[in-house]
Image (cartoon, rainbow, N blue to C red; front, side):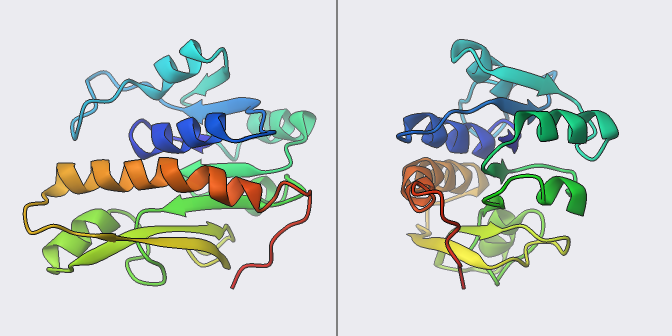
Length: 187
């Protein structure tokens, strides 16, 4: 798992709820302040509470991390809310793929801050997309999408929380698509 506090926590909780899933390691960073959008513990604390290996502030494409990941031999790498673009070397390590949970209905709102963009553009619907990662940002085949209505009362914080709750709900569903050891094609 690669991700930051917030959406990353939701994905990690979803993974921990999934049957037949072992989370080997989490790559994240520790913030010097509380998570600003809604009440959430730091990802590093969530890892500690679940006895997970947690690596802080690592350059994800470094030789050190690439070698660590190769040694762990993950079936799948799950990414959510991360500020580094993964190299082809990292993306290709797991045998079933590297997937990303993106907080919009791709192909709309690729890139960072899609939850802000949907509000600024007056959208009444957004959602989450889980897709295979490629070298190009948010461009891999889509494995799963689920829509979410935006309330007229939603603001950036409330929408981020709703998206995180939806992410936690859908992660076990998506992981089950890989349970037989076969990589779903996606669209």
